[in-house]
Length: 150
Image (cartoon, rainbow, N blue to C red; front, side):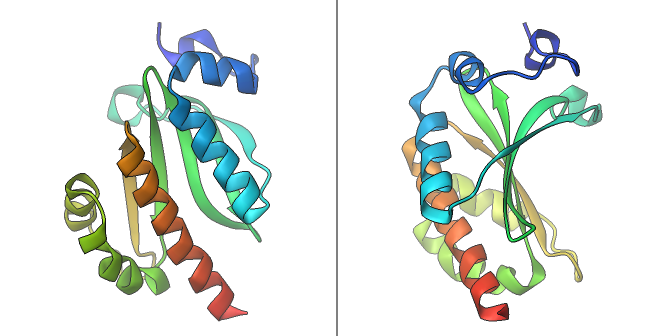
């Protein structure tokens, strides 16, 4: 059964239900890291987006710092689908990081168009520790860019 069928708009899942559905420790590792490293409190939101055959539909977990999106996690069976905006001011630094990332992340970054005002948006399938490391490093790029603007 699909995530959005198990948990409709009126039935917000608990952390344990997300953990059970995803069925991989990568969810907890990433969640704990984001909460502790950046002192963020995730927010559950529901999306009715039917794009990509409903891939984005259902409950998701948004992580923001100072009102700026770090990433949004969409629970999937056996993995996480993570949407990460990379702002225009972060693109060059993220590009420098790419040789240290997995081939998968490098390929997604390369294929993702860059909008002159908004930067890039990466949709990463988080299926292993290496991609979790890429996500952590990309979020660190975002945090450095935020700190530089202060």
